[in-house]
Length: 316
Image (cartoon, rainbow, N blue to C red; front, side, top):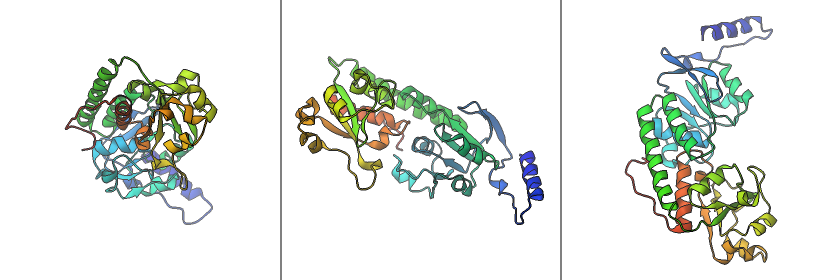
């Protein structure tokens, strides 16, 4: 840290402009720190007990808020989180600029690896530690991430408890779906068309819910997407559509009437049998414990599954 301050000071002395000033480093200096290796293999010096955390991304928000509460987080993402009431107690919302993040004077930034390398390095350049984690690809990865971030923010015991609770929910769901005599074929369809496919997070979600991912079964690969024509060819038993939480202004998620009003789509088994269900977009888009909410909800719509009630939940 002293070397960073020295280099910044030297840069100011050599700069041909006046008014050069050092960033406020007090917010990023900690008397006690430790070195960890983040998900990208970068060694990062982080506070032993961070108190001014900036959380980047809905998944990050959804995991960190239950782990550390709202007093230790100074800013979160601008997108709607799953923990709405708790998030309302956190005043800061970050934009996509590094200046926005730096303005909150964090002692730790936690972000997923989908953020650009330049974005992360610009934050690190002023001495703010950034822990970048690998985006989970399945439910097991999300549970592992809970424990990883629990270690980062010095809340290991709490993380173990919450991760264990999520594991129990998955075990109960697996026990139910393993007894199904037949698994229905399902797809996820939004304004952008078909989502899912081989190797996608949607395939994992469907598998845990006791469903066959129709897009993957038809040969669509992750991120490729599918058209209306593909939907007709797949002929799914069930269609899931997202809630409007992330739908662009002026647009609406397709509803059952949109399928029934289209002669070709009306013949799809899901439409004919009125098996078109809405799933919370915030659950689907969060690579966190809330992904399990989506799995449980889909299994309930498809097969009448009732998730076990547990007093020790993430929502508390």
